[in-house]
Length: 187
Length: 230
Image (cartoon, rainbow over all chains, first blue to last red; front, side, top):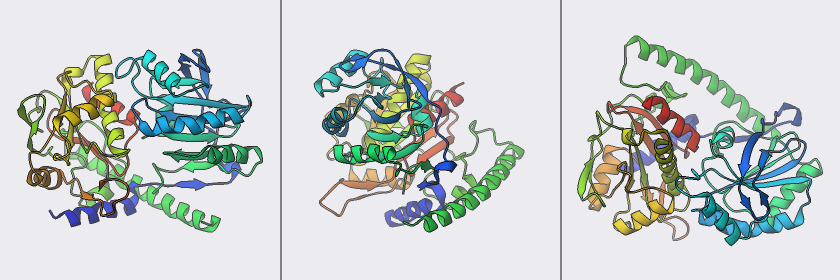
């Protein structure tokens, strides 16, 4: 088969519903997710205790990352700025869904965290429960949740500190709208 | 976009979803009725639509295609069907200069390798990552790429497939597996444009699932593999 036909075939697939998109819906339509208990790693800013993600009753910023991911490394600086700018009323947590204990050890994650100046809780999604719930298919993925654990912002790839802070502020001032994932990633 | 547009999109989508799930159910019954014992997983959600779209790659229930490709580190060619009878196969297509999709596809393979090691089914799976950029992707670059993402290359279940020529790339990747990619005409951004494709075939040599359009989340793949291993 010719390459061009294959490309056309793939483009066709996207239009028949393989790809999904996100909808912004009315606040009343949205249901928050059930939080998941994750074990944090003992590291700078991170106690090593269990944490509930996203925290009900708080605005949450959750960042999925992997230690092999260079974009995640680069994102640590803007995340550090965000950490410095927010107060305790916002839950900030980074989550790796790598198979910790197999492809990477806990102490390697701790070292990565130190090397990149992390100073907020860092947790492991050991049984991929949160990964599945939020359908995380790549890193970095950042999400903002409102107090009811409703996703109001989702970003794949890099984002500036300003953008992230704007999204957190939007939840605060009530201008954020729930982001409802219909099927997969946005087209 | 306005709210108006959103609501139209949503209605259209919901309607087509309803149609798909009805079609999906019918497809399932047909399969069960015809006694198709080749696959264990249920058909994908939008199976009827996918089937009618005549996609170039296998989706579900097809015989897993055969290709024989050199594999660095094992000093022998690997056939995609040599595992029939022994191992379930996860096959994907990558290039190491790829920024996000390929590392994510590769980390799906790593997640399965880790799960297999933890649950004791390492010798029931084979993880095949095929490069479509063999000129740049030397054995060493493949090793760095794989190990950098946590792959255990010496676990006897991880194989890089490296076609020995552009012609073989065309034959294996495009003709045999229907994986479309093209060189990015722009100087900016990624070297190649391609849709993610990850194929899970069972040890009987039939396709259980193709993950495409988007990289699946690791949990989906691990659970699908667990269900066919059990």
